[in-house]
Length: 165
Image (cartoon, rainbow, N blue to C red; front, side):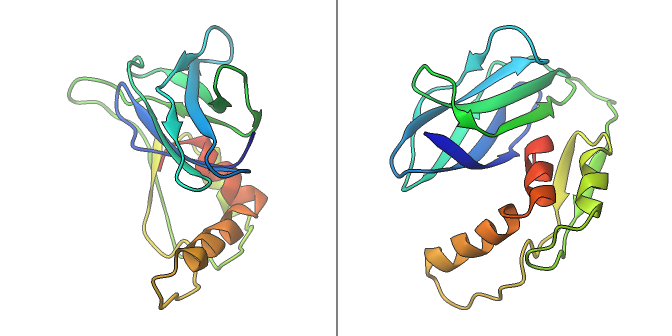
């Protein structure tokens, strides 16, 4: 099993979500996270994918803590992509940086994606137009192809793994 795309999102003080594109249909996978880059992994519940797309969530994380994560099949580490994020602070009157982006040309691999990735943002908000395919049908294959084209570029793919959106 390998993870071809990883997109983090749904960040809270104690949880994160992920969407993973897997190399094969119907693999059962979990999201595994650990504080920093050492120590034991915390694993979410196994989630069966729909086709080769898995939606995952892990809870019970510590607020305001940096994590690395990966997609795992069963109990063995996956071969493929890793991500990172820092949970939100808990309480009120907290401060953190948020990244905003949108309107990149389809297939763009512009250096601005690297600038955003290293900005120190806690999470990002995509303002729309992740691609410009202007799809006028309800066929999932066309939407997936457009997203695949975005993730085929190294810089945006690394950005969507660098912190949740």
